[in-house]
Length: 91
Image 1: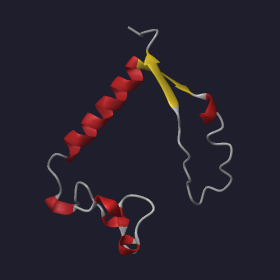
Image 2: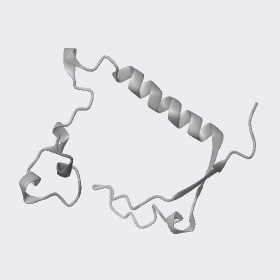
Image 3: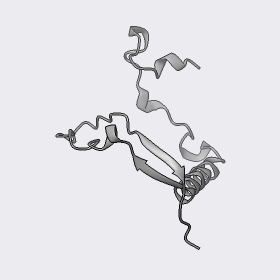
Image 4: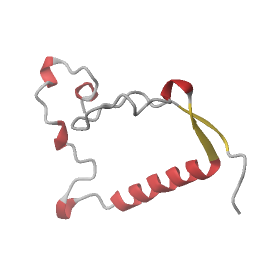
């Protein structure tokens, strides 16, 4: 494991690495038996977060999408979000 190959900017040693080759769960008949569990757990964490927290964009992220003129390459600036405990609950 060489984590430096994923950190930007990459050194010349890792410049030509094919990063699309990373398959965290593998593919085909030998794929990870825990893949569906991992995706279910990720969905559960996301649902719990959205259910129990109120999310609000902070002022520096209000125009997060407005500067994006071309959608061939997706460039993502930091998206700052304020999380507070949910004020109202739907029962």
